[in-house]
Length: 136
Image (cartoon, rainbow, N blue to C red; front, side, top):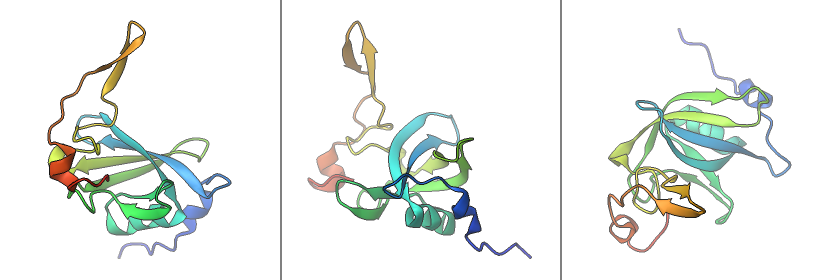
């Protein structure tokens, strides 16, 4: 019989004064960093409970499940907490291969070269085709 998850593990997480913690989504297969977002206690608990990444949107002031509009869900295989207990790392399988609202595989698609930002990753699907004008 599996142990009961009583949620006490959440008490070890060092949320900031706003009740948030940075969360990094990393591709479990190849290690590529796909995105960064914020989580509150509820988002982290829902991520653990459902197996899909949930985040807190500071701009929208609400909880959201990654991919709820785009269909590009993040299936979580592992949740890690850093040594200072103030950063979450999610090992994920990115459904649809697109993590960024710009239609790219990763939100980290620009590299600094010779004093300027160079776009290195192609758009896999136009945002308008994904969201119909909405952002994820």
